[in-house]
Image 1 (tube, rainbow, N blue to C red):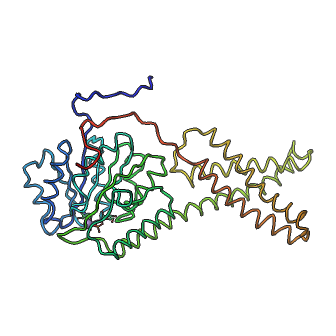
Image 2: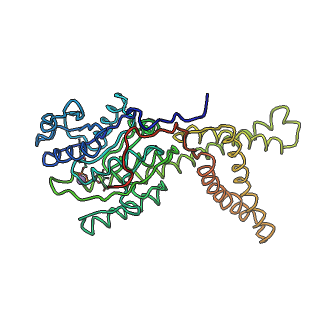
Amino acid sequence: MSAEPIAQSLDEPATERCLVVVPTYDEAENIDRLLDAVLAAAPYADVLVVDDNSPDGTARLVTRRREFGERVWLLERPGKAGLGAAYRAGFAWALERGYDRIAQMDADLSHPPERVPALFAALDDADVSVGSRYVDGGGVANWAWRRRLLSWAGNLYVRLVLGTGVHDNTAGFKAFRREALEDIGVLESESNGYSFQIENTWRAAQAGLSVVEVPITFTDRTEGQSKMSGSIATEALTRVLVWRFSEVLMFLAVGGFGYIVDVVAFNAFRLVEPFKALDPAYARTAAVVLAILVNYIGNRAWTWRNVPSDDRRRELALFFLFSVIGFGFSLACLLISHDVLGYTSALADNISANVVGLALGAVFRFWTYKKYVFHAQAPVREVRRASVKVPSRPA
Ligand code: GDD
Ligand code: MN
């Protein structure tokens, strides 16, 4: 197979199919203006409205459109089930129908329709594009300072806790290559509201996908009402902590199990041939190797199961290296406290080796496993050019 990308000549007909998914709940005052603007800004794209049986008749307005059944589509759901559920249904619809680039945006004109082409174009060489308020050139218009501060602080919190490397982690204006939606596992996510947005961006970063931010100005809605509430914001704050915390807990649980394996194996080895006849150091070494293997399998299959692995041998070799160094922390702490500092009591030895050394080693191992071992490389994708000539900067 040749590694040459299949370059597409500029005068070839359109091959990349683009869809914009728009969830609606009571957006009758906005939907026509939004559809007009999106259809005009991206003449190559279709739009799917996902309506949760809005009492104000939003769906009826969609079916009355001239483009209905050609470029405008409607997915009707029985009742209000939340933003995340609506997007999951819309993305499933898009994947089934073979769209190549799938964007998401709100119906209330908060997201500038004229930036839809920039989001789609960014997917020429990225897996995910995010319409971002918090990069150069982006911003928010007519938000009260309290809402501004809340959004900014929320984003900072998410960045610090999850470390996605993305500035706008709650953004609701984004686009994905279809493979990205599949890699992220969007259809299996559980969250709604703000945390739905955070979860997908985080999973994309974790899966090693390339995420680019495209500056946009977010303008607060002038018609209708926001459906976001304190409980949706709280869901996001707690989920972010749970995601991060559960990673640490899983790592610790795997480590605890590994420790038990180590102790049991050491004693078992001392009783069996060929170890029985040998120096106990051999049994010790064999038990440590076994414990490291158990740790590797546990972390690979559970703690970091969502991180794709491209080279198992390299992964295992690095894991061994960092594990040995990590366990070496106990020994180093013991030597320092016993021989250098002169604390020679049994209690002091235990504190230095089994409390301080073990804890420092665990921190070191968690950090190196995460940063170097279970760290996804960006998947190699075929270079694809947008079939449509789209401006990458606003006109
Ligand atoms: N189908 C469906 N079902 N649509 C819904 C539902 C629902 O339960 N809840 C909200 N929507 C639709 C709205 O009709 C609108 O088109 C869009 O989802 C966003 O809802 P808003 O209520 O306008 O959200 P917001 O302006 O407070 O929040 C926006 O900005 C946040 C970042 O600041 C959204 O884009 C959030 O996702 C984003 O995190
Ligand atoms: Mn809104």
